[in-house]
Image 1 (spheres, one colour):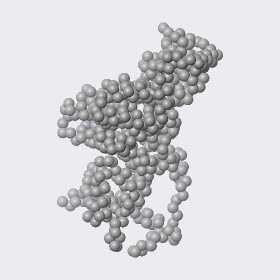
Image 2 (cartoon, rainbow, N blue to C red):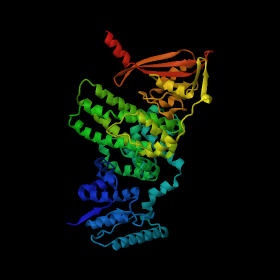
Image 3 (cartoon, rainbow, N blue to C red):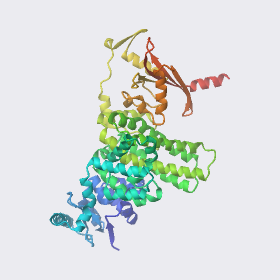
Image 4 (cartoon, rainbow, N blue to C red):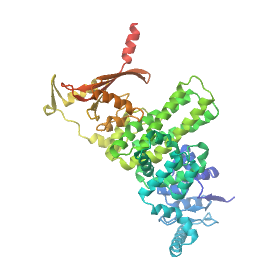
Length: 544
């Protein structure tokens, strides 16, 4: 029986039809094909020619390998010679198995000649068919960047007025071949600048994703693979994110590995939810995603907002992260498990899976295109504070380790002595003393800028990248008004301290916010002290 390999089909479909395709692809350098999660997700929207382009693998090598394995190739594929001309169709009969390497080269030449001839004919005479084939690309090429963003805003506004998603998406597809992550970000920020409330943008977050990604509704996902593929094509243009994601130990590499593990866990958990065998233990396992979201909230979102004035997607995603995390928390605390519990669990799993898409195709590319190498080094250092989740271990990023080690250590000596009212200390002594105190110390100055965190293990993570930026940027949108209220009450003299008792990771903590004033009662800033009170709890339990 003849084995026909249609290059226009997805990798997933080809492997399903011919399992040996996976082994051939692996030998060609496509190691990801052995990852079932990647095959069952990206594999469903990725074709062999597109994968070859992303990986930089020659189509001539691919054609030769499949010919040797006895396949006849059919369908669409790009120019074998690797130039930028339009892809050509394989002849209906394909390439016969058993041909020599010279036949492969001849095929490449033939395809190239056909492509060049097609291009010449297009220039000489613009037929209706050629014009139709070029419509989308022509529209895209003639629309300037600002006009594209304005068009995207108009689509988002239509969604905001309640217009049916399908109608808006049809118009979008007719005018855009693909959309860049940065354009989505500019459109959402533009809406907020024009007065659209943040809460409304957040509420429509999933609809925005549905417009550009395909759909957040599970049953529509298969029908929207073409749009996911378009976004992946746009991501190909940014080699920076691909490089960083593939750099072992880099923060984006570790976050991506966590996403892969989370996606696999979601797929397995959804099976349990469908059969109504999922339990609170399953919820708690997925709840590890809170640590993943905390990394984004501490290390990525605030830095995008403060250092690069990119706040739209960050603010929206940050709030959605909180909604997902809180939802899992409610399920874990539920007194009983019923149909409504399973329905909510399934919905939250779907939202978490959608967030994986948004991170990989919107958030991470934006970070990769903006953050400097030195900023990534510092973010890498800050990731030490977080627990490992989903079995994804922290791996050393050799480049960052070398760069951080090369930084000159602070010197000590008489020239670094600080004279205080109660005596004098060297910088080394003062630093060691503050780090020895059994509490987390934060100081925010009189203009609300983070100026100091003491070192050591912390329950409330404080990335060093937050030093020098305003304290409000370090808090999720829901919490920011509370923080502003506390600090403002210190500034205007209404209060001198605010104390809070809370429980975290099963231990009691005493959090004390204190106004710092000089001898003339002028406000200098806010001091936050966080102390683990488990020792006191255990002490008083013993003496009762």
